[in-house]
Amino acid sequence: MHMQGHAIVIGASISGLLAARALADHFERVTLLERDAIPPAGENRKGVPQGHHAHGLLAQGRISMEQLLPGLTTELEAAGAARGDLADDARWHLAGDFHCRFKSGIKGLLVSRPLLEATVRRRVLALPNVTLQPEVDVTGLTASPDSKHVTGVRLRRLCGDGEQALAADLVVDASGRGSRLPGWLSALGYAPPQEERVDIGLSYTTRVYRRAPEHAGGARAIVLAASRESRRTGALLFMEGERWILTVGGYRGDPPGAGEAALLDFARSLPAPQFAEVASQAEPLTHPKTFRYPANVRRRYERLARFPQGLLAIGDAIASFNPVYGQGMTVAALEAQALAAELACGKEGLARRFFRRAAKLVDVPWTIAVGNDARLLDIREYNGFANRLINGYLDRLHRAARTDAVLSLAFHRVANLMASPASLFAPAIVARVLLGNLLPRRFRAASPLAMTTR
Ligand SMILES: Cc1cc2nc3c(=O)[nH]c(=O)nc-3n(C[C@H](O)[C@H](O)[C@H](O)COP(=O)(O)OP(=O)(O)OC[C@H]3O[C@@H](n4cnc5c(N)ncnc54)[C@H](O)[C@@H]3O)c2cc1C
Image 1 (cartoon, rainbow, N blue to C red):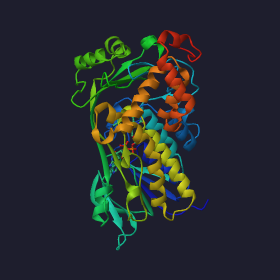
Image 2 (image 1 turned 90 degrees about the vertical axis):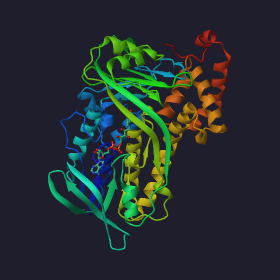
Image 3 (image 1 turned 30 degrees about the vertical axis):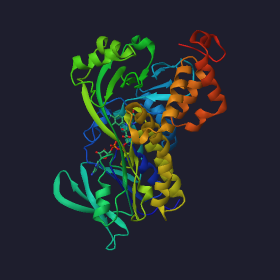
Image 4 (image 1 turned 135 degrees about the horizontal axis):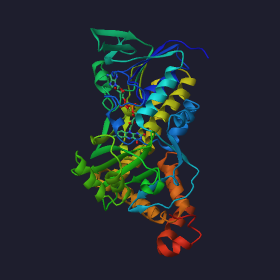
């Protein structure tokens, strides 16, 4: 392959690193510019404050990262991560009760966010043409006199010596949901992208504990989704080093609180007893940490009529989703694969082709997150008749999935971005949902619909 030119990536978190992996096959040099100092493997850092909170990697995310970096899963397992069956090792409390337990054949990976990022970083930096410059704050773009081409970035090194310019043939903004790209575009005379914002006011509190094998009935993950009955949510996930990460969350005016006692009270209020069990019995390894996630945000770069050449955005800089759905890193990996595919078709018109493709990738997770949030919080603008109908159907699907493994599997495939949401409306699935809601539970458990129950 003919490799020419220099690509700069702003931000060396998950989407920046995976973008660098894609760019490395098409550019002679790829430079990652990261504001943070890089900590030892497995430690959190300031620019990724979400790293302190539960991070699950969806099955599609693991598959996509593995395709970009073959052998990544095995490497993470060797470092203590756990590969497990999504419906056998993990338990899902959705719409008021647990789905049944069965072997789905879908393998997820339980690993802390800092270890995942450090391992991806090590693999990407092992590529001979990729380098990372830490403690560099990118402050703006440089462009040709007519502003039609972005020619590089302006930056400040944290060790001093003022603002500098660094030239590049392509600049990729992977600086996350706080991206300043809309303002930088305006400074060059371009319209900023239209921004969709869906306020949810989610608050998280998280603590890490030592895990004992008997906790949570031997499960490695418990996920509790908020429902119309309780707008409280939680995730209890295995992490390397035989630890639990316990995150609990509440929407709009119902924060779990910051202290130990508040966290325990909140855990006790949840309809899945495993949260209170671990919070009250396991040995804590950290102090509780809080996080506020105000809104789902989507920037519609694909709708802009004018956009300079030599510039892209990726990951949370394009769209950031309510974290309870665990989609962000998977979307970052899918976008990196889309970038690789578009680069393989040439660099001409790259931004237009990439943004169009990324928008299609974002549509499904955005619809899942916003559709469910809108129903849960009754956000009028997004909770029209169709949304209420779909979510009413999904409630019934979850109810039937308490004993029907086929329905549970169909749901997990969609939630893991492995199948289209339309697959949940296939006639065979609709029939099972109807039947599952008509038969009383004690008959359902004994019927052929029930493959295995908990
Ligand atoms: C509380 C929480 C929980 C989450 N849980 C999950 C989960 O379970 N599963 C999942 O898949 N996703 C989850 N996500 C989303 C996930 O963290 C992100 O989607 C993922 O990190 C990819 O984001 P990114 O790389 O685009 O941006 P970020 O991770 O935000 O990284 C941006 C990077 O850019 C750097 N940077 C910013 N500005 C500059 C600048 N001017 N110059 C140089 N560097 C800069 C920052 O230091 C940082 O390293 C969660 C998010 C939150 C907030």
